[in-house]
Length: 230
Image (cartoon, rainbow, N blue to C red; front, side, top):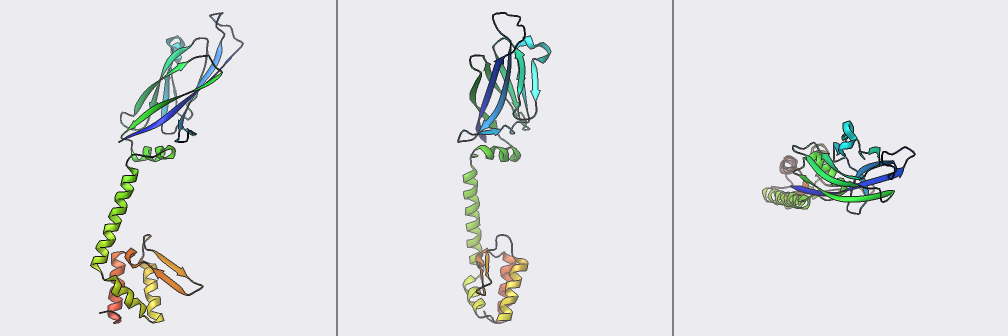
């Protein structure tokens, strides 16, 4: 699976009152920050990356490679020259390193550049983060498949148990037996069991098709025992 996201690099720069080794070029203080964009173009913290390394011009000597681990991974420096840097973006995935290139220039006090980054075979943890900024391929297919499986399970359940007879048998219960069945549903139902309790009108509704198999059998056996179904 490949997931694409747009990464925005924000560069800001201004002159500073320091002597420049090149008099015709004033000294600058500059910074680069990294964000991830959602589909509407809104900024989000780039927390899909665990760290970012900026590879600067060799003239920075022992500061040529600068690594940051907290969004927005701000790289701030001083200098007089423009240059192209490479930026390594890391994730926790195996081989999870992507390199992009950024042109540092001083034509504007602030400018933004948007680039596309591809995440290859992201883990479930990374997918969860990426969902915050856009859709994930195959998500809709997975939901459709899960819905289809649930529909098939309900069909199988309906075939295995005569719910029409069960519903008819429930209508024949006296108040004590009905309360007993309701208690069974409360005790043995699951989060998928649909019930509605209208206390004011004294009504209790249950979707029999959402009963777990074990509970459906318990109710069936109870109705057979008290002879409301046969």
